[in-house]
Image (cartoon, rainbow, N blue to C red; front, side, top):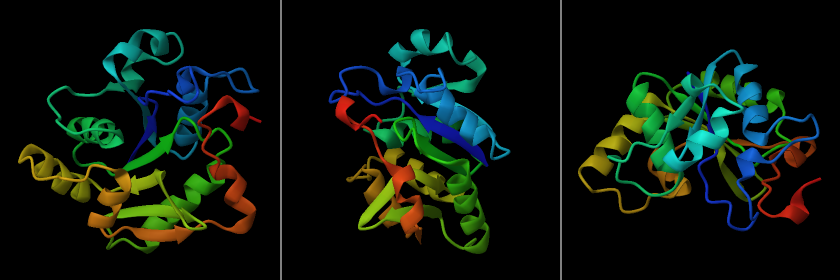
Length: 193
């Protein structure tokens, strides 16, 4: 398994690149998320659009950055996930959004344990109340190969991660009430605490 921090979003509501926002510890959000994934004992990367490479390389070594592949014709976060899959096709991918700054390592490790206990699935994801959390999920190499094949054949009509998790019949792990606060997805300045 590898870890992938998703930092390639447009950050329109935030007004600035969310992955480059600085946390209380003084690290940028993307580096903080990357450190959390590495703390789970897996090699981890930060997924970016090409134009983001330069500002991020000041904080993260280029060998730990995966740039979206232009030949992958998919929109949204699945492009970044499939870009990582194209480099590491035999690895499952634990995805974490850079804009979940409160995420705890224990939640990531719980998801990894959930995967082990539900090995027959093709994806594993948290559900926080009624909300599926596709940006804190594990996507299997086998499932991603199926999705990559559909993209290549231009047969993937819905590219949202929720649709993809549904297609992969993901195993769903409910978020405990005490852990719900770790899943805050910060999209605008007023959500930063």
